[in-house]
Length: 533
Image (tube, rainbow, N blue to C red; front, top):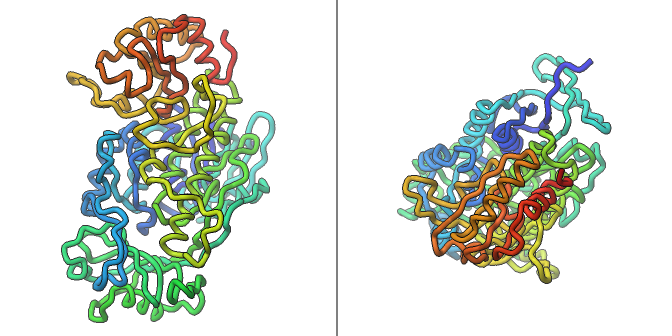
């Protein structure tokens, strides 16, 4: 007997599970997310929200609430820097201002907001869009067949079990994913780098900040290596410790001999003073790891977030990468479930997200070695790319992307300001003279396929609408008269670009070319992994 049927079952209801449920709801798909914990995050955890994630939250109506909550929790535009101690010598300023030099490429900005405040916003929005969220509930078992997944879930409080039938299962159940383990999917990479701890504490940090606006504070001294994050009004925060002893002879097993007294010693060694009373609220053990799953899909089960890739916190990429997994997967599931796309579209999730995730894991690892663990050596270390390009300029290659003619250099990323609408890259932000309309081209995207054409590309728009009607799909077409638009998207005024629901360019025609309904129908059908009617 099946107790509940739902299109998508999500194992995990933390940052990535909630985001995936929200994105599915945004596309009209019901989901059920089950989460072991009894509620959303109670401790800060991941905090840096990059521009791409903010753009995605903008698409689903959450950008402004996130900005308000961020302003409550942190001073904006803080720095990322390194010290011997908070009271002592400054060593390096990695990022003097979180948004310095990046405001021109997006209508959204980078912010800090911890999961403790972000997850309730995601939860509320997901439920408003039809998601069912069951906290204090475990996924006990699952089996898949040719048409779906049958799972057993159990409520922790009373032990009551239910059987759920879903078309698809998304595993967002963390770094120690039981779903991944049951599927026998291996994690490949560098493995565990350290047994680390995060110490949540209260104490007056304001005098030690000395007016400096610091978002992340790395600590390097002979007693430990780690980092601080301190919240408004500068009387609470956490210290993450990755190794003890001098960096040249680091002991990466911070768990060994760990006591409350030892944690107090860590805090004093990082503050650089002994006269600041500190109360420890909690200590959490975790492992710094740099690995990527060997595949992100097995049949009707998909891995997302830490279940698919785990990376050290250096760079702050982990949570953002997980949110972007869910965003990539949600629109594809929606169109397949609606019968608009062929089931092969779901295979493009692995083809697109796994290479990007593996690249990002290596970037986080390079930062980990460079900033925290030089003893690991630099053999085979990936050169560090710019944070902006990691965030906004990665490139997809899959059956859902129709490349331009010419050779492919195979690069995983490129300078953000040079992507210029290349198929497989994020559609560029271009400021529109909207007269009350959307301020950015990015505000056109988020629900349907959208065709943007230059001032002389009206034929593309009409043929696109006709082709979409033939294929029975929702579609938008907009002609942009602004003289600067074609250059921003790598076309002529007579050209056009096709942007997918996730805001990535799927195809472009630099000029008028063979503008016809049949040509656009072929492009749309290929983008959906189906044959035109």
